[in-house]
Length: 125
Image (cartoon, rainbow, N blue to C red; front, side, top):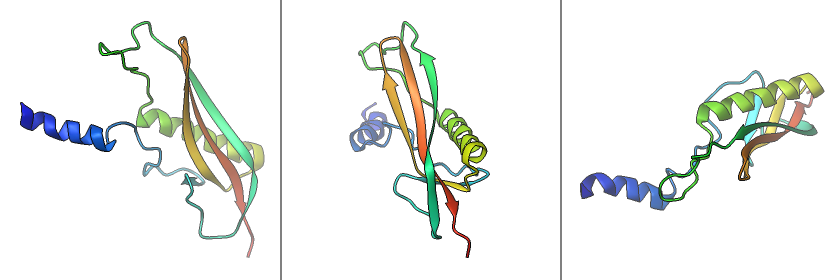
């Protein structure tokens, strides 16, 4: 039993299992750069874009030890990033997004998941 629990405990201590990372290997119609990553070519910022998803919290949204069960799967994050990409393309004709990040705001009644970034266009050579 102890041998089975050790990897789980170690992962929790190191923070490995605490969150789903936002920068998967999913390909989008435009370039998507997460956090502080930037493209290798010159670009101009067009402005911020944001999408959100609001979910009502179920009455039993806490585990028996009192911790919140709220969270977003990798598939849900990828779907929101895709919506962000489409919004950036349709509103400002973006060729990419930089600074893409994820945020969760939780109240007793609901959880709001936000994906935001800055739309960019590449400089012509």
